[in-house]
Length: 117
Image 1: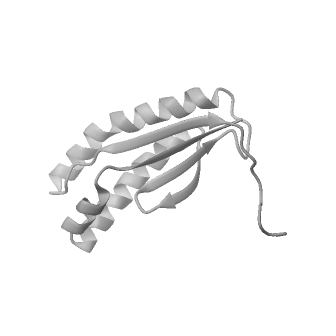
Image 2 (image 1 turned 30 degrees about the vertical axis):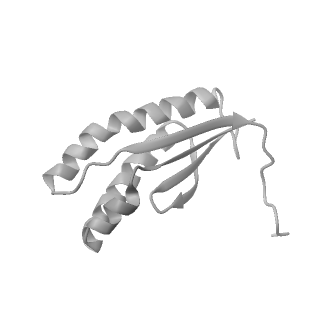
Image 3 (image 1 turned 45 degrees about the horizontal axis):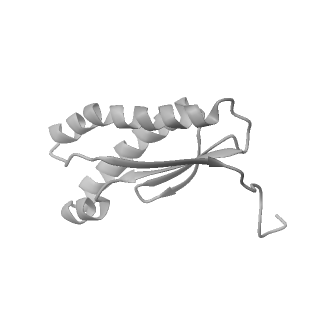
């Protein structure tokens, strides 16, 4: 059994199109730094970074006790982090961000699939 979470920035395309490249890089780098720190603090494993999106696993590749609870706590911590993060963004004239999160727990097949190596 594995818990999978996907999170991303709401309206990221519109935000990205409204910013200069340098500002977008600052926003995205700081956002990802905060979110990944929260994920790791809740024993999640970032499987992929997809632009602003994060695909995260719990209970694979290593066992994680109470993985569904930790994923939910992580999502709540991500939401709580937005107040201070948006204050940082406001101070340097960047737009506020909101985060969307989806979580599912179920049976999956994991491992190296599609290649012998």
